[in-house]
Length: 286
Ligand SMILES: [Zn+2]
Image (cartoon, rainbow, N blue to C red; front, side, top):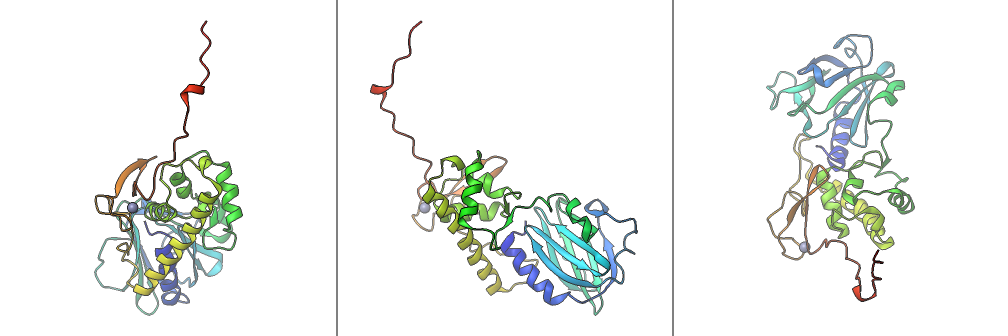
């Protein structure tokens, strides 16, 4: 899926390229992906409306239109945005194509069709599944060390599952969850309630630094928005290859419903508490 660093780039490019332009034509490739929350039919509901603003919120991209309307996209696993000239053949079959005044076309494609596109009024945003329940935005000033300490203290799951929980942190996907845990030197299966204060501090710093440096890298490359830049990642997608820090082979492990990539030396499992069996009281015999 486009993850937060990808979406920061997409947001900036789209804000420069499509803001202020009216929609002159709209086509949908698969109606299943479109969620129309208004009585007006598609595409009439969009025609003539100007894209006033583009904003990222967690993994969602929100396009504010005239008349209090908005288009909200949750790209999920395989959604991709692209910009093209109207009339040029699509690289992938677009799920949604918005032709804009001036000849630019904003396209959204999604091979697995898992993403959703909502057309709604701004006052209906809370009805969009997963939008109102988003946790703290990781690039906002509200994301602080005390905040993550409070979150972690309430969790009973494994740290990688916590990172992926969009209602807690908005938003981290599989690729950056692995990168963050590698930077924090934490095993992906570590339980949140076992994290020591210094480990939570490392986790917090790793979230900020990993996302910040990825954003800088992706912005510096400045590639077309449909290109997913992943070649600078240190563990994700590198199972079987040597760790860039210690040379140990990067492993893959199942955590919940997902596969995680990690280095078994840089990210050791939690230390087993030493049990001195000489002092374990014998069970009373009955
Ligand atoms: Zn290593």
